[in-house]
Image (cartoon, rainbow, N blue to C red; front, side, top):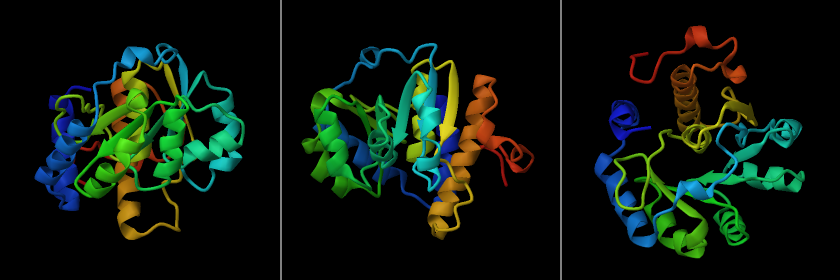
Length: 229
C-alpha cells in the first residue's frame, strides 16, 4: 500500500470521526523516536501463504480451528492471547496498545513480532509501553504518512490493519475468524469503527481480486471507503 493510495481514504476517516491529523503525526513522530526500522523480509512464510486474520470478537473462541489450519496467523490485539491459550501459534500481532499491552510486550520478548500502532488518541500509551517491547520484534506503524522507521500498510482498526499487513507480506489467501461487525455489546464509536473496518476489507478484497467469506451477504450495502454513504 503506497501512501498516495491510502491518503484519500485516510482523509475520509479523519473527516468522519473528526480526528486531528496533526495529533496522528505527533504520535507517529514519538513512535519514530522510540523505535528502529524493521525489515519485513524477516517475516518468513507469508509470501504465497494462506493467512488467518483473527479479530477479537466474541465468536473467536469458537473459530480457532480456522487459524489452526492456516499457514500463518495474524492476530488483532487480545485475539493473540485467545489463540495462544487454544494452542494456536500466532506469527504476528497487530495492536494500538489499548488492551493487554503487558502481555503483548511479553510476547515480543519471546520472539513474536508485534506491529504497534501510534495515533492521536494513544500518545500516552506509546510513551509508556513502546520502551517495554523488544525492539527487535517491533514493527512501528501509523495511519498518517510514514516517516523514518514508522510504516503505513493501510487499515484503521487493529483487525483490518492485520489484513492489510498480511496483504503487504504477500499472502495468497486471507481467511477470517473472530469478526463480528454487528456486535451489539459495543458502544457507538466502536460500532462506527467496525463499519469502517468492513468497508476497508471490502476495498481490500477488490484490490486483491479476492472474495472474503465474512463479507458474503453484506456487499450490496457496502460502499468503498472513498465513496459517500
